[in-house]
Image 1 (spheres, helix red, strand yellow):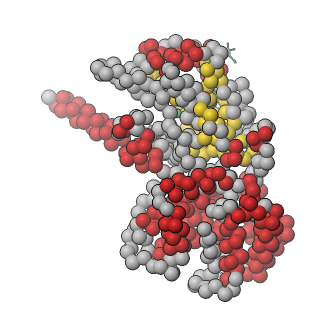
Image 2: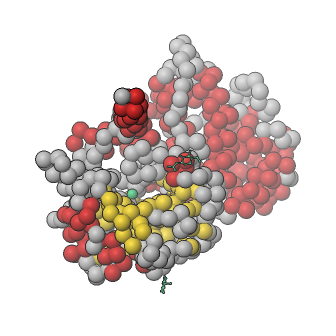
Image 3: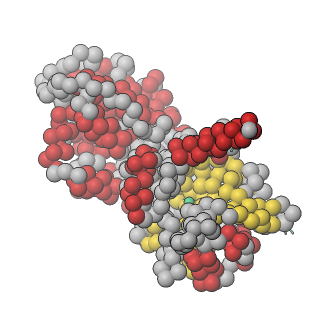
Amino acid sequence: MRTLSLTLAAVLQVTFFAVLHEAKWTYNGPEGEHHWSKHYPFCGGVFQSPIDIQTDLLRFDPHLRPIELHNYNLSANEHLTLGNNGHSVQLSLPSRMFLSGLPHRYSAAQLHFHWGSANTPSGSEHLVNGKRFAAEMHIVHFNSDKYANLSMAVDKSDGLAVLGVLVEVGKFNPAFDQFLKFINGIKYRDQKVKVPGFNVRALLPLRLDEYYRYDGSLTTPPCYPSVLWTLFRSPIQISPKQFLSLASAVYSSHAQESNSVSLNANYRKPQLSDHRVVLVSFKEGRGLHGTRTVTSPLVRKQLIQQLLVGDLADLADEGLYQLLPSGPDMPLTADKKWKDHNNKQGPKTHHVNLKKQLLHPLKKSQKNNRNVGSLGLPEEALCFVSLERQVLHRAKQSHTEAQIVHALRDLVFPELNLRSYLGCKSELDLSTIRHIIRRRPTDEALELDDSLRRASARLKKRFPSAASKKGVPTTTYEGFSNAARPAKSQPQGYPHPWLLPMEWED
Ligand SMILES: *[C@@H]1O[C@H](CO)[C@@H](O)[C@H](O)[C@H]1NC(C)=O
Ligand SMILES: *[C@@H]1O[C@H](CO)[C@@H](O)[C@H](O)[C@H]1NC(C)=O
Ligand SMILES: [Zn+2]
């Protein structure tokens, strides 16, 4: 009896845990992707995956090394678990398989697939210039330098690295048959079979040096923004028959359920780019014409060092070009998308007024004082501009006291931008430059201001269309010169008019 009640307690606990942490989700219907964020708030957050890899988001980065795979050739004596989890077909991988050439060592955990349906061989998650491939393979790795296992790493900003491989229907692929031949053993949800190890390298494209790299998320709930994505440029091929066995052999329902539900079309729609830049390791083809080289991490650090303690006059003379935003090569589309998205939620005037209200809190003070509360943001902001907008929007919604909004803008955002800049994840924002040199001697700071103003005017003359694009970080330089006008009133705490909060023009 005692044993029974203990068992019952254990079962109840397990069930409770499952209910808490695994609300049902699907790709369609009432639990479909538009509703994921109800139970999984990160799915409605920023830096989500997949994305449509569009040419104008790309920046060539010469520092991206070929991906190096270690211990990927598994022996047939080693048994792997092939399973149907109701959302995908998944193969477990031993953690001695790992990647190098990334900021940390990432050990393998599993690989799985996303695919279309039998009559629609179009089910990849990532799109390349709007093109959806037949299927996509994800090889999931966790940061084993810092975390003990996948579950410890999954919600950390530097927790995961996933290799994405696009799959086309074409030639027969012998490597795929190493596990596909067992697929009838896992027709139903929660079924598992053991399969002999094989050379997992053979599932990947030949070229591991050409890929897209960006910061994103799990593409399924809970959608944590914890993934360093590597999507290989070359697709691999599987035969029509092999595609069909993925697309029609498995069910998302349990064996005992009377209504079998086919497991297919298990891909998430592309997410907003949120001002992210996609780095590319290769530089060729018409599409990439004009893509700028991203500043190297070393140069970025030197630049910050110089802003902090170096000679600002020197920087004004020589290092200036590095401070300036990239002009016409900024990912304008990303910004436009964000705006379009925003405009759908309300008329533009609303957005403008909102921004004015938030950024000029002294003119219009909000009476209600409610806490900002949990912002639900990833631990490390990857992209300054969209983050800033989102937080300001939420602050406004919660009628946050004007001073808090002000402090967020002056203290928190520059820090976040600085961090993401150093991590090569965004451009250096003007307010961040200000933040950094706030304690520097005023005449040096002024000289830098002067040079920046002249240089940005030159940039505007050279690329008038880019400079006139609204909402792009380049326009902040207009604010720069406005703020430098001594006529503006000076709130306390700013040593010089030049360091006044900038005007935001929409
Ligand atoms: C993988 O390992 C097997 C032995 O386990 C060996 O015969 C085979 O040549 C290896 N394949 C590659 C591509 O290194
Ligand atoms: C992961 O590691 C943590 C910490 O070492 C441990 O408590 C947990 O049980 C492990 N989880 C799994 C699934 O192995
Ligand atoms: Zn996946």
